[in-house]
Length: 480
Image 1 (tube, rainbow, N blue to C red):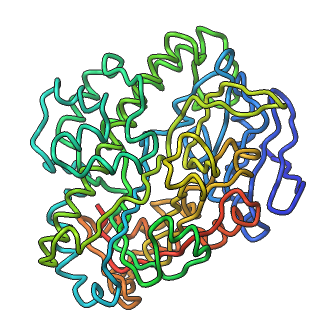
Image 2: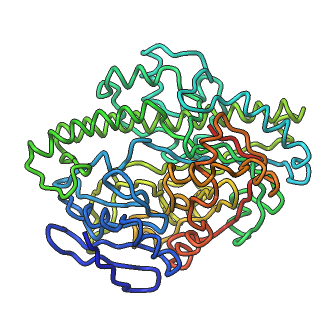
Image 3: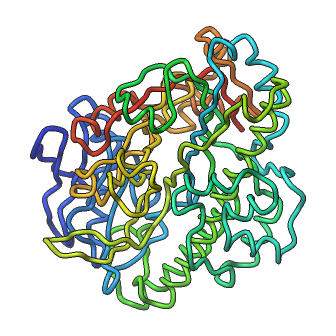
């Protein structure tokens, strides 16, 4: 399909409404990034998403957009709750894949000469890699269902972290109305042994230095300053979330036929939000989201213990505090302004993240002035960014922003390109120590397979959708 992209404003391209599209498509991208997007064919998926019943305003994509399952990764779509649909492909297989940022009182000057034993300690304590397990004892099915309802709160109750952590997790680490009865026995079986595990793919633990501050006032409120050591944790709901998605894609195929929903791509299969099938998926998806919130909470606690042991220090000197924990693959029921009226919407964010602005009642008191922290990890060889949500995001994108750099090369291509390169040595020469269960995983995630994260973040900043606060650079990285 040939997709027409019209530039309607700086950093905004539009796909005109045509055929069965209910709304136009809108892609936020700079002139530097738009060629990647044209070549990826992801714009076709933006147009396809615009066919969804009940979609409002635009089918949107952030500047990190690339080809995904049904929805593009970087896609945002909001459908009316009363007559719209929910699509498992609009959330993705790794439900609530997300990032946690933790600040410390450690300095980069202190940590750099100690990074190898420190990273080794974390690597040994946080299970990583395909099928990894064993962070905590294998749960009974009853315990797992309790975890699926409580989310990060389950981890706190079981000694992983402090209760104050919950204030700095999206939705306090617990999506309400998660219903384990809507989860298949196969998904439950896959979830029994994997809480607190990193997994593989693009998931990582990164020890980073705060290299640059753009907004001193917001950075101070976030607890960030130049030369400081912070930790990022990027993982999701593991095999449990994958199975939930897989199960409900099959359910949605039948629902699309049952409710006579016409779609240009079978990967967009969906069910009316208010239908039995739609409500069951939402209840199961929330379980997977809570599994992921718990996962990052447990991993954060394991990392804290590793730092305390490796550095022979105490908690007060370590200053290990959660800045924010954010979901990247999720659908949420939210209230937004549409044509001057408040509407209850099902907001799909796939490879996109909330960017709620100042004064939003869901944010903790600490972030009422700044807007929420928006965490945008780059690749393991360049940089990541901490930004803040804005009022403009609420007006333009349902309070949404990009979630990362965005791939420009498939994993298969990346492995081929990396074949003869000494990839660990290349990164070490840049001052970045990498430990991984598999060389293949590192090859898939080398810097050259991603867009320039600085360009991606600058696009959002120039549109005032998010505001740059700080730039982080990696010192040590753990991959699956």
